[in-house]
Structure formats: structure tokens, C-alpha cells
Image 1 (cartoon, helix red, strand yellow):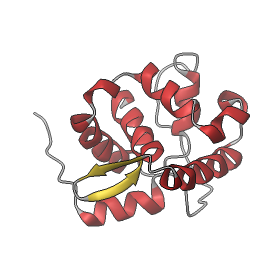
Image 2: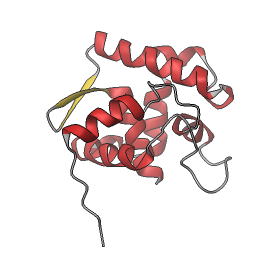
Image 3: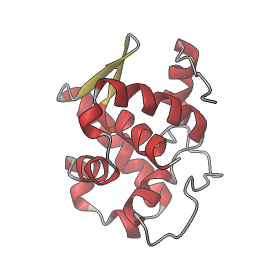
Image 4: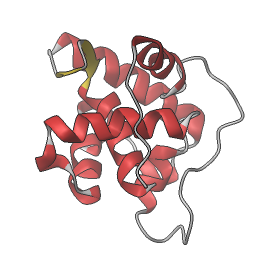
Amino acid sequence: MIKTVYVTRRLVLRLVFVCVGILGFNGFRPVLSGTQDDYSEAHSLLTILNDPESANALGREYLRIAPEEANIDILVNLISSSQHFLTIDIGNTNRSELRNVVRRQLQKDFELKEIAHVHGWILSKTEVRLCALSALIA
């Protein structure tokens, strides 16, 4: 049975502040199960998510409007080829620095109008791609 999750403004606001670690919480946990060797970059990226369930809901909604990105390798490549990610080795970067890189990339996405419209909200492509990655791996 598939659980229907409605994306509300409250959920999106929660994601904006929690999903990519903007608040700087220290208790981040990995979202992946299984071996760390599989999709190690994806695993590293997802360690910054504080609320995987909310990220998954937003990610599923994004993948409905961008089904061509519904692939883990494609999403990791799209995220890691963004300007601020080119300067780091994602798999060997600590969570704090990764959160800083994501924060800078979110700002750059808005400057470059690299945005997605999800349920009336305007979100950074990097943010929704991280959520989509979480949804695919969950």
C-alpha cells in the first residue's frame, strides 16, 4: 500500500530550513542502508539531510515533473557538476564543509535562476535534486 504524502507549504518551509542543514544541526545521520561502497558520493551527499522523510516527499514530487532525472547516477552527476561542488571531493569532505558548499550552491542557483517550481514553491535545483536522490535511495 502506497502512503500518500501531501506537499504543503509547511512541509516545504520545513525542508528549506532542515533538509540541507541550513540550521547547522550536528546530529545528522546517514539515510542509506547497505554498503557504503555503493554510491559513496550519494551517501556522502545525503548525510546532510536532517529529515529524510520530508526530503523523500519533496523528491518524489520533483521527480514527477522531471522524470528524466529519476536515476541516482544522473542526479549525483548533476549535483556534483555544479560550480561549488567542482572544488571538492564529495566522498572525502566532512559534513560541515559539505553543508557550506550546499549553502553556497543554493545561493548560486538562485542567482543563475537554476530553480524548480514544486507545488507553487520556487526551490533551488540543487535542493530538489538532493531530495530526489534521497527519494530514489529510500
